[in-house]
Length: 116
Image (tube, rainbow, N blue to C red; front, side, top):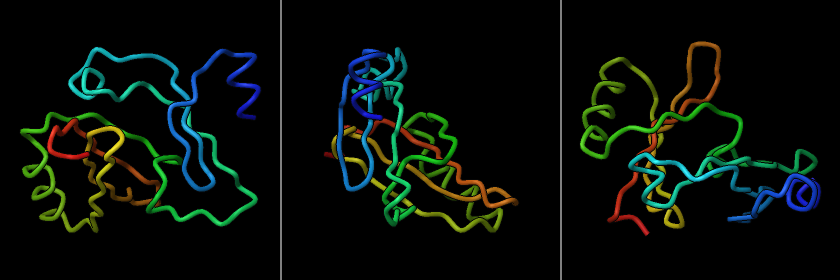
């Protein structure tokens, strides 16, 4: 699959981790995009165990401003949601992960120069 999306579709491999590969679809003109986070396609090896906390795939992500990160964390906590905070050094980003009522994973991610 990686070879297909790289060689046939023309996407660039930007990061490899255990059981997952990220390919760049396009650059983004957003705070996170200007910080180095492009629009990505994540390919996961489903035949191997996947630690959901280490993956940024199988979820819906929304970019937020860094200035709103703590406010969003507090708001989600007040709503009773179980939140996981992750940092992504290779992207200079931090994110809040939580589930919707049906168990779908959501992410609020922001560019953060202090990460990395």
